[in-house]
Length: 375
Image 1: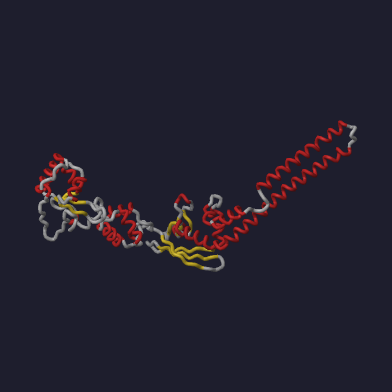
Image 2: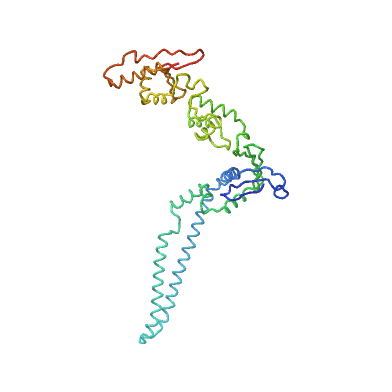
């Protein structure tokens, strides 16, 4: 298999298409490179993990050797400056003190060398203070932490793609990928340096549910959860807990459940509806729509429901929508009830004829909820 679109921004793939490229024949298998690459990276990290401690010790030793070389370099510079100062002093010692002009001319280079030696001595002192010859405890801890954080080292900006490929090639000789047609399963055989062979399986999402199969099972479960009154977000949690996955192998989300509900023809159907019998029937209204029809706030209808002054039933689920039953006679009674409440504003109790709901005749075979919410 060859790498295609081998750029991170171009969705790299592995494709068995030599016959297609060379002779225009049919393509063989192909897959997105991200999933097997991620698995190989995890395998490599696990393989080099035992060497992390040795790596940290070696890094500490190397850091101290580097510091030894730097200290030796600075010391050589100071010694050279001292040697130059001594050379500049000898002509001055040999000159006749009475020859002032010559002595002064010879003293100037000597003084410059002494100043240079003093400056270098101060620089060395500052360098030794900032960079001790031996690593401190916190510095050793930092090296050990970096060596233990192999994923961080791999993903660091200072680690190039060439570095990562070199590490993989040092450990792995070849990788065989086999993908069954229209399947999310990819068989991966890793041939390690030294002769070891390990087998793994990578799952990669498909473009449609047809290749994965089980769409009818998912459909039935989603509609069942919807009929039980669960919202799209709550249904997604249940589906993930039960091991269902979407076509591309990802987890379910509320948005994905809503998209599937639209696909299943359930757009606009509220939670808790299993079949047509759960929807508003003759003389039934959604509570909010009925409140709007009467020109009142929904909370007033809920108060009447709590007081058992109106027939209502609730769809399944903890937050199922309410459906109110009111034939023309009930509509007239409830309008009079509201007028009475507005007139007396709680100073008088409504008469029984305004608060007693009419008896509802339930067709044989159907079910309704009583004003108190029971069947």
